[in-house]
Image (cartoon, rainbow, N blue to C red; front, side, top):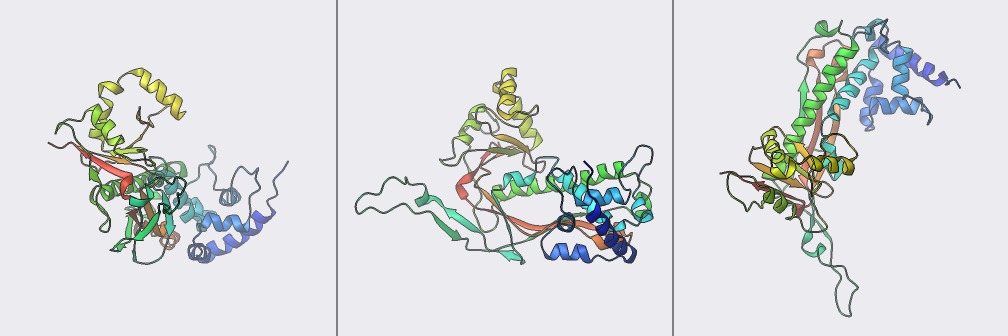
Length: 354
């Protein structure tokens, strides 16, 4: 059964015209509506449920920008084939793909809120009453109350990103398959930066909420299996430790503990996770996350279901105008957001520094 490309061809005509005039109105519309360029294309050319690609991929096909071993596609092909309006979104999509190739920061966040403004007043869950049992109310007794409060201080949005330190002349003849790898590496770098930011937030607080409580009770300078168990058991129900965040050195120490050298541990881990690579830490089954900038002797235990909130003013976005004008060295891929602590009792640290 052939796929009807009628709407895609109509959309291609509009994109050809925008490429010809360097018209970025569709990017601006998408930004104003909180959409990606791909989302907007999808509205104009909806994909059926059985489609193998989306509206953006169909445009890449119509503009002959899909890689073919016998006909390599280069970065310059976007301009030669009058599809330059697609280049910023191509770069954006590949950077976003790289962002999700390592341990994606979004998996550590309980909720994401879109909110404009240079500052935000964090909200948090007060647990003193919420943790009480919600048993059947007796005569004259009050129900336990689950309460939300604003923090006493507001926190500022963080504008984070990376610049492209190369010119269009450098990459114009680079094949897309090679350029794609470079863009994905940039995305992975941005995600790594955010993992470090999350670790620092938990360790030091966000300027409005307190730092995580240090629950280490072992021998200073030594990390033992019992210390990891103690970290996990510091969480009071309904919270539980879903993740451990630390740097490579601390991770190496953990994985060299006698309790984790038994190959049966790894076999059991694979059965639990259904994956062939390391995703958990028995017996708690807490997922392991490397934060390169973390202090070598500090572990962070996190309940990702409840601990953190991300307030986003601008999602990860590339400066499309610089790309279209072939001034890539002036372009920036950036994101404006701030992480805050939603539940104080959903994260703890274990500092075994001497």
